[in-house]
Length: 162
Image (cartoon, rainbow, N blue to C red):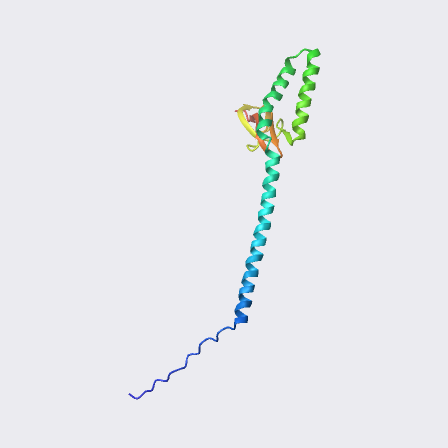
């Protein structure tokens, strides 16, 4: 067999010039720098948001401890004489105004549909109205800047048996 093997010369890739290598390194460094700047910008935004939330919710434990005092003022008003009721009502109103100024809102419950995110059902009662509606509020609920800090304790309507 006299087949000749022809050797195909393999072409070696041309070596890149030093200038091209420097350009690639410069481009790579530029891209890394841009990514680092973007990451840093995202970090600054995230840190600012965390700071803002910290400030908004820093007083949450204090406010949560004040809520039973407001409840007790309400109970005292129900049983107070007409003369002392005015003073109690004034103090209760001042306390409510202070916590409202700091982002606290009362959760409306009575006559609203039951929402497990806002309300805590402690009981169901047969009622003529539509099922799932709140018919009694046993304890007021509150939110702080939109976050529930105490759900409203409610009694929910259920259909009577026939």
